Amino acid sequence: MKPELTSKSKASKITHGIAGGYLLQPIPKVIAMVLLTALGIFGTHFGGFKLAIILMLAFIALPPVLAVVWKTQIGIYILITASFFLSIGLRLIPNLPIGMSIDFLILLMLIGKGFRIQFNRDWSRLKSPLTVIILIWVMYNLSQIANPWAASRAAFFYVIRPAVGYLMLYFLIWDSVKGTKEVNNIFNYVLFLGWIAAIWGIYQFFFGYFGWEMAHIIRTDTIHLVFNHGRWRSFGPVGGPAQYGIIMASLACIAGNSFFYKESVKDKVLMAFLFFCFLLAMVYSGTRASFVIIPIFYFIKVIISRNKKLYLTIILGIIGLVILAKVPSNNYQIQRIQSVFKANEDKSYQIRAANRKMITPWILRHPIGGGLGSTGVWGQRFSPGTFLASFPPDSGVIRVAVELGWIGLIIFVLIYLQAFFKGTKGLWQMETRIHKDKVESIICCLPAWGLVEMGQEVAGVFPMSLLFWVFLAIIFTTLKYEKIETETDN
Image (tube, rainbow, N blue to C red; front, top):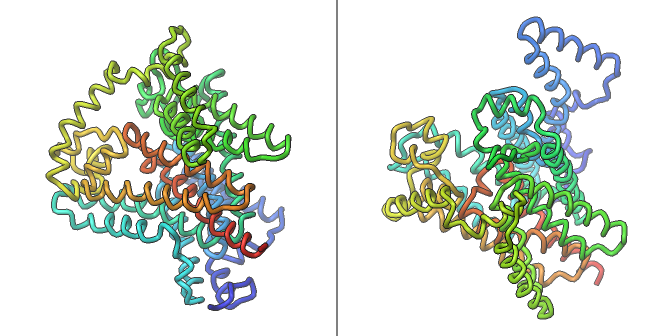
């Protein structure tokens, strides 16, 4: 096996040049300010304020973006940041090509990573516990180009980019992260950005939306999504309340679980504070599906902990949920939680149940589905008037089953199952307590996400479509390096 590339190696110099190493050299502040001002004036003169902003942001962002070719970690942090805050760009500048920007960034990272792996002739570095099932998923999605039931080939090229491109982040993290310290940095960075998003949502609840946020809601005619039963729902910097609530609930579980693993009082106080912020943001999102995540998380935690003393707490928890579901209350937030237990009485649930009953025979007759992008927004855009285009995909499970068939649904479920069982097996073999909180937290989230997929979309909608693979990479990179560190110490 050839040694790892260093900054002085031939391949590293080449990739540094591709990345625009010249642009990354220190630039005198005066020259930088002059160039930035010139771009602003040029953009304002020829294209108005929006063009000026785009040119100035491009000038600032170009060096770090190009640097991802030879420094994958930079791209990882950029993508994680984008997953939380990229929707802000769409609200400020409509029709901004955000999806293409992410695709281009991932492509640059893959080019750099592929070049270095080819130079080392060491493709075994991409071998991980999930490599086989992920590659099967990728190949199956790519094969949809030949789906005879697909009403539009154009939709395939729009949907395949995030469907395949985003999961590449798993391999990029798996191969690029070196050691548990770097994994911890990524994990803590996700918590930090999540906290900013939580504070944003809490602000929206108490003080209302910013003017440009409300303008975006009115412009896109999405008031019905953020205004429910006389209450405005928080969504923070994320695309919508549903995804925001799911992310906040997941981070609340992670922070709450980490509280019990932290040893210092300072760290425990920090995790308790984060848990409180995430929990408030989750409640203010008004997302009923998010209320399911916490009890499912705790139930799985108790089961995989194999601690019989904790089994009693499940019974107490069930009693508590029954009381919460039955107790009369005039509080809107409590009523919203209670509505989860009265789903059969909810009109939207009844409509969804009827739609699923109607579409099930069609799914059974089409094992490979109707093709990527055949339903939902993409279906209405590329194949309007067709049966699937008019069908509302109300959950991740239904969307996968309709577009990729029951074969695709089986593969999709297998990703969840393999991640859970292989992760749990690795967790039971871990000897270092300090690393267990990350692995256990995310593993316990997986069944909760899988259950929520039956009522909402989780892994298929931005930003969880990116964060999902970040979380899976955190599980298995932590397991990999914890094992190496334990063997070294012994």
